[in-house]
Image (cartoon, rainbow, N blue to C red):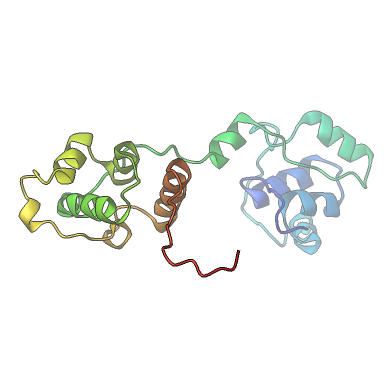
Length: 194
């Protein structure tokens, strides 16, 4: 049994079904379900997983009939999860969209925008819009200091305010630094002997 191997969604229920309905070895079932071989033997003896009804991995698309037949014919064959629509739905990441900001935290967004404008001048307005979840007009009013609450705005880190994560901010800053032209620092007294 390996640590990084994908296992079925309900491993014990899948193991129960495989023990009851196939001629696979305990090792094959244990490797496929991410369990210990003795635990599978306990399932076969009726000591483990009592009351758990078996789940057919072929119905959920986690195992193909052909692979099951190959494994039944060859005891050294190792079963692997099939790439299914169900698997892609379970493992897919959520889309980054507009996230909900509680009413009590909405007044912090202008402070975060002010911090980004002040500390990261090379960030584009569209990047701030995505990171903070605000409008370009709000960013423009803070940038030209015509925001209705400008006198009360404080420059506060959006990560500390809980508006975005540090990894999202770092990714945005790296992207902004790649897009901006390099800054050349001119040194006046160069004492090299060229």
